[in-house]
Length: 428
Image (cartoon, rainbow, N blue to C red; front, side):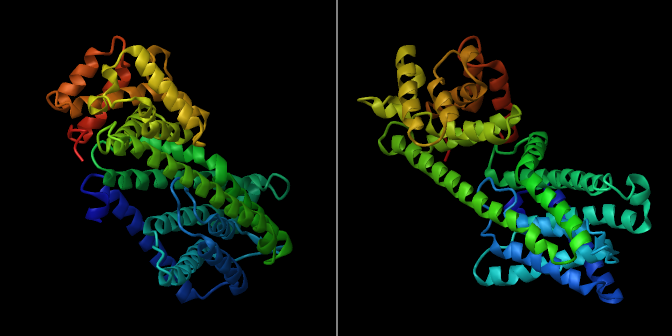
């Protein structure tokens, strides 16, 4: 745990999440073992659905928040299940948790035999969120309180939808906590604000999260009418969605790898110092999070920071230390425009190319991402020139806030570096 998350105030949060999930799982398993399995046919159907969803996934790729949407939808459907073929169910909240835990454990065995790593944090998160949904839904449904609130008619689906919305918020809170803890392994300045991570997770609910939640609710309502065979029909579209999402993620990953390789071309050719593009991208991403960028906007910033120097390949002779800030303004703009033209041919998207093209403009005319790239790039260049260390480099950036750098970006950079101990950017 110390090696993965580092030492800090958030490491206990990870321990608490895992400990709470383990305690909940043990209580659910013990209760189910003592009282027996209610409606074993339904438990088997949903257990197989969750296990199958875990088995068909290949592991989370970069940016993929839910690598097993079929398993998540099946678990939510079982938590929100009140009737089966018109007859009330009696499985209760603790049995839901027990079935999901056992299904995840069974799916982990063949995955482990194939050398695939089990994500303990994701498993703990699913246990807690499914448990939250089941505890909110099952007692109210079994006692008849939900029917008294929503009626037994067209308004009743509002009840599982309300529980689903609360569950999604719970999952976003846990995901943001775990993501911030994991970011500690990224090194100095890599720790993003919790608020921006939470906003990022909530926004992501509009994508795959909405499909998972809708499938879970529809599956539960389908079983209520048609019986335990409904999941086989209702979860088919989500399986196709999972395959399509995996292909889309693979394309994005390939695009990212292409840009990283192109960014290294300037280093190999001697135009920029070793590791410059990687340092600028990591620090720019941290500054972007500090300023509230999330989701696609943060991805555009990261890719533009990686590719910001690609236009230098048009120079006959490399600039000393790769510091283009020392060049005349017209030459800086020419290099930026050539870099943008290269980026447009990589498939990175017009937004990334626009940031690269405009990084040499006066900051008042730039989009925020270009301002960040310009400032972080100048900071790394100044540290590489041994101007007196990070504090001296920040001082020079502050002196340039009249024309070259936006004051808010410089101050955000200072806060990010302060959290990392103001380590020199050029180190490593």
